[in-house]
Length: 383
Image (cartoon, rainbow, N blue to C red):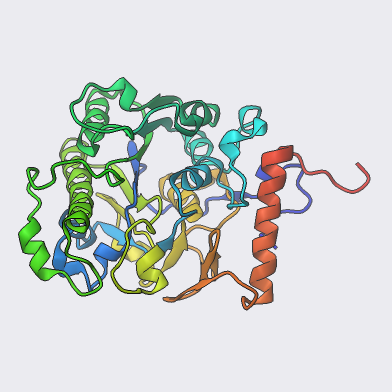
C-alpha cells in the first residue's frame, strides 16, 4: 500500500529509492532547514499579505531562485511530533519515538539525519531551547546527527524559560558557518521565540505595531495581547530573513528550506478555514534553485521534505530511504495526524474519507508503530 518492496528484509531496504535525474546542477556545500516555532502559512496568504508580517520571506518567494508548495500539512499540532517526524521519517502514530528504547538502539534510515549523512553531509542540529526538553539532544545525536547545540551553549541576554531569542540562535549558526571547514554540512534549526510568553520587545526591534493595527481584518483582534503575538510573527520573519541574507552573501551556493512546526496556536477572532488555521509554509530557496522545479499549486506534508532534499542534493545513482514520495512526484493524496488533502482544500480524517486513503493511513501508522517498537527487521511468515 505504501509502495515498499514486500520482499525486502528491512523497512529501510523496502523503501530504498534511486535518484535517476539530479534536480540541481551542482550539489550545495551547505543545506539549512529552518523549522520555525508556530511558523504558520496564514501571514503569506493574499488576504493577510498587506499586513506585511513576513516581508523578508515574501522577498525570497518572489525570487526566481525559489519554489514553494501552495501549502503544507505539518506532522502534528505540537513541536515534538514534527521533530519526531523529521528525525525518524515516519508517519505520526500517536507514539513519541524520542521516548522509546528502540530509538537509542538503531538508527532510522528514513530520518533526515541518516539520509543527509549518507549523501555526504555532516549533520548539525540547532535548538533555541534547552537540551533536556523532550531529551532532544540525546535523541538527535542517537539518530545520525554529528553535533547538537542549544541555548545552554550560547551567551545571550533576554530569552525566557523556553530558550534564547531567535536572533541569538541564528547568530551562532552563522558564526559556525563562517568558520566551517571544507566539508558539506546539513543544518536543521528549530526556533523558539514565536511562543508564549511572547516577551521580546518587538516594537524596539522595529515592529510597526500602530500601522499594522490599522490594517487588521475583522478575523483578527486588535487588542494589545494579539498585537504583541503578531509582532513575534514579524520578529521571526526578520530573524530568518537576516540570517539567510547574511549566509547567502558569504556562502552563495547554500540551499535553504523554511517551514513551521505547526500553525494552530494563533487564535482568530472569527472562524477560518482549515488551510488558514492549520497549514504551514514550505519554501526552497537558493542560488541553484528554479521556480520551474516544482509545479504550481503543489501541496505536501512534512515527511516529503526529506525525499525532496535527497532528490535535490544527490547525484545520479545515489540512494536514500523514504516511506513517502518527494514533492517532485505525482503523489496524489497527502495526510498528517488528523488532516488530508489532494488539492487546494483540506479535510479532516474521519469516517467519510475514501476507503483507499483510510487503508493507506492505517498502513503508514502500523509501519511506524512496528519500526518504533520492534525495529527495522521485517518478519515474514514462517520466520
